[in-house]
Amino acid sequence: MLEQILQSIKYFQPETALVVSFCLIVIADLFLKKRNELTSYLALIAILITAYFLVQQGTVGTQSIFFDMFAIDPFSLFFKAIILTSSFFVILFSIYSKELQGRPKGIGEYNALIIALTLGMFLMTGATNLLMIYLALELSSLTSYILAGYTNEAKDSSEASLKYIIYGALSSGIMLYGISIIYGLTGSLDLNTVHQALVLQSVNQAALIIAGIFIVVGFGYKISAVPFHFWTPDVYEGAPVTITALLSVASKAAGFAMLIRFIKVTFIDPAIGNLGPGMWAVLRGFDWNFVLAVLSVLSMTIGNLVALSQKNLKRLLAYSSIAHAGYMLMGLVVFSNEGIAAVMIYFIIYLFMNLGAFYVIMLVADRIGSENIDDYRGLGYRTPLIGVSMTIFLLSLTGVPPTAGFIGKLYLFSALISAKVFWLAIVGVLNSVVSLYYYVRVLRNMFLRDPQPNAQPLHFSNMEILILLLLVVPTFLLGLYFTPIVEYAQASIGMFGVR
Image (cartoon, rainbow, N blue to C red; front, side, top):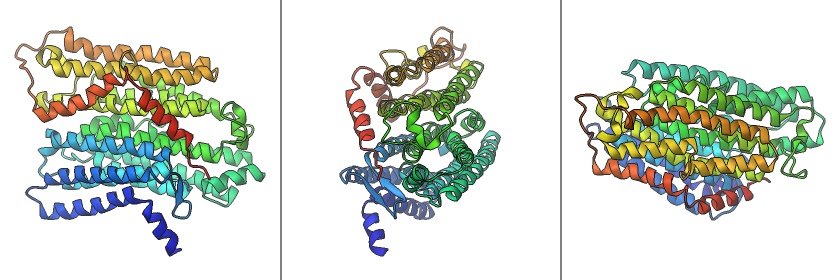
């Protein structure tokens, strides 16, 4: 037993680095009370060290560690890279955020919590045991609750944290009940063993379907899919912009990674092939493709329609995030390798364009003290770089060529057309057209409306401009040259770790 644990730790270096970094940042915060902004740089160094170990982890192939509770494979490494990159950018954002730096309590514990949240999301990507899935989800959720209410001096921040906890506790409880049903039916919590039991044994299908739905509730909450989305707009509006950005990208990526692995390992019969209802052979008599399609359509449609009436940019992007969860669920409806790869490609692009949009909101809010769309009047003329950058991000979120967002949606729609799910592709295209309206509202205010009479140009430091360019350039260039990310995604799904 000890030998296996030591052997597992050898493959667990990135996660170990995050644990050690968390402890060091907490200790450093105790001794740097007057200069605890230095913990931000410690957190950045910790992420770079973790990235080094992540590259090393990529050379070991596919491994199952800690008594088959956690998998090391290219699929999990792909999502870990997205999560780590998001955390790196968010910590950079935080260094220049007046919303955070102006707090009397400092930022040391904030950075420690970011590292802990990153660890929880890492564990979510590779969990192959239902108990491990639940524990990883709880670790990331508990740290998210605290971070969402970190600026607790603001009323909406405390309200956001409380709502987040209530919805999170309810969905976690429902998910745990579903896990207990599966354990009762199969006698195991290991996903591969559960799969074998479902294939070889005759289990109560009604109980299995109920258990599956209950577990999907937990996943749906994490990815902000309708009807499990009610926490999203209030939390996104009340949380610090930096945390909103992290939740919208990294937390969603971890949730999708966990959902894909759960479905693929537990319910998909690899002997039947990639496409068609037959692949769900272990869940006979229940059309899961249709259930996922309904969740996708509801998320896209409700997210886009409600966003039309929003005046606060953070709430607008919250509903936009719900809609984008619907777009990505389209790839899961097909659940071919092409569909899953399309979701992974979309996440790389979504990272840059969504983080970029939130970063612009943070920069502008720090200068004008508002996140209202009407207060962006004439911003494109007052500060052209900000106006052009926000235009690129919003057009990419819409899916307009030649931005990277067009490539992401192109691969999703191609997967649907290849699987002959034409009706869902049409719904997706129509929803993209709807989304164009509320994104253009922002552009109209920036370029087609005169600024306030006493409005002054906004000024930014060289480092703030550099961070902005690090997000703008990939959002544009990946729309022109996207072969590397496509090959990376396809290679990662082709080596999905299943024992």
